[in-house]
Image 1 (cartoon, rainbow, N blue to C red):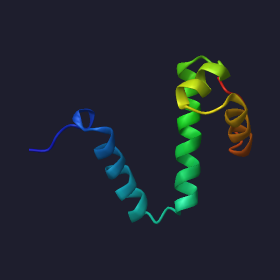
Image 2 (cartoon, one colour; image 1 turned 45 degrees about the vertical axis):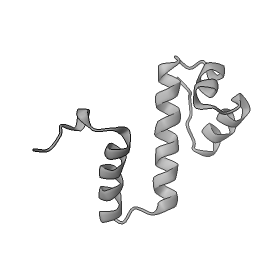
Image 3 (cartoon, rainbow, N blue to C red; image 1 turned 60 degrees about the horizontal axis):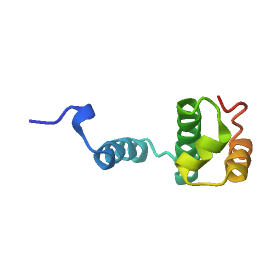
Length: 78
């Protein structure tokens, strides 16, 4: 019997998503860029746009967060 998606570990969930991306022939750089963008947006929502708290939770400097958001064309950190 298969586990529900919500019961899987993060590793198992990522394996499923990555398998689908490989099957769809998503390029590595595109996959990394999309992951990073969603990760930053989600963390930013969690900390209500507070860049210092978001960066700290992500383990990066606030300036790095700002530059990555700019490169990834994230217009507004919530």
